[in-house]
Length: 418
Image 1 (cartoon, rainbow, N blue to C red):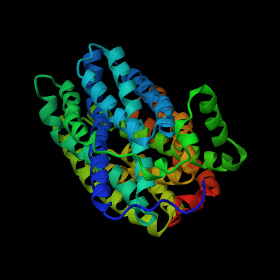
Image 2 (image 1 turned 90 degrees about the vertical axis):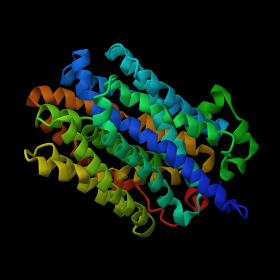
Image 3 (image 1 turned 30 degrees about the horizontal axis):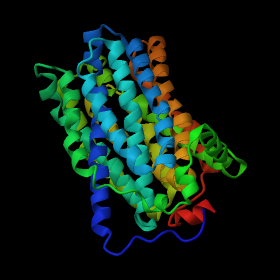
Image 4 (image 1 turned 135 degrees about the vertical axis):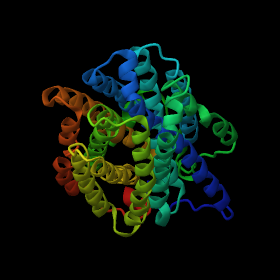
């Protein structure tokens, strides 16, 4: 698990460039698919006769799919990064398309549950692929770029939202457009290679399988040498998921039903927000590689929590829009978390470890937060203050993060693992 990393052969830069392009394109559509439930939520409530509490529970159930993603992400240690990544892209595309033909809230939740499982698998394994293939000095920037393209998917979705929602298919057209990944997937399927570090592992790791090996890998992740790292990763991911899901999924519902915005106003705010939020991602990459992981995480979590509280308590459309621009920019906590947790575990257990800290433990925040928002909305009588309270969770988790997250800036994966 230690030693020198396998060097990329001469002439590999074109392949690495193509790899980054492919991972970024499919992540763009992952970001699009993630946003459109925010856009569709008010119309789902109308079509399916669901109130805010019911919709909050529905989003919470859908997000349990992010926990179930523990299974496919873990399989990346057994079968390799390449097949799991490609199957995840195909899976989220298929179930996004199926969501467009939902006849009620129950089957919509079922389709989106599976789609969300594959989306999280794609972005989790994509971060591992870039972490293992890119040079140390570019690692944080490469992972951040991938997540920035997820944000660009939000720009795409918010820009075309008014045209799609006014079409014959209405909100369903949002999910039809999600199928655009298919030709990109067909082109890259035969061209994507397995990562060098996975290929360089001892054959026993790559070929091992069955329930006994599954439990062995899980026990290894939870063994004494890695317990502090598991606590660090799980806390980082729980914070990201709880904060993000509370302020991301309910924005359209909040401004439509509680501030009286129309589709055009929502589209303008989101398009502006996602466009300017790129600056948050553009800053996060260099900060990760220059200022370090701990300082960057602290800054982004703190500013994000404050901005979300302002956004969901303000009355002025201008204040709401500006605050939400900042919230979207601070969603660079996603690549920050992915960079940290992809680095701190050795290659043979990297997939399993990320599945544990991100999907099995951290994603409980994504499942719980919307349900808590839905419950608090009944107590407050509105979604806005409920989201504002839940979005302050980073301040409760930051002390644990600072006590457990070690600095990994500029270090090779093999040095970190040892």
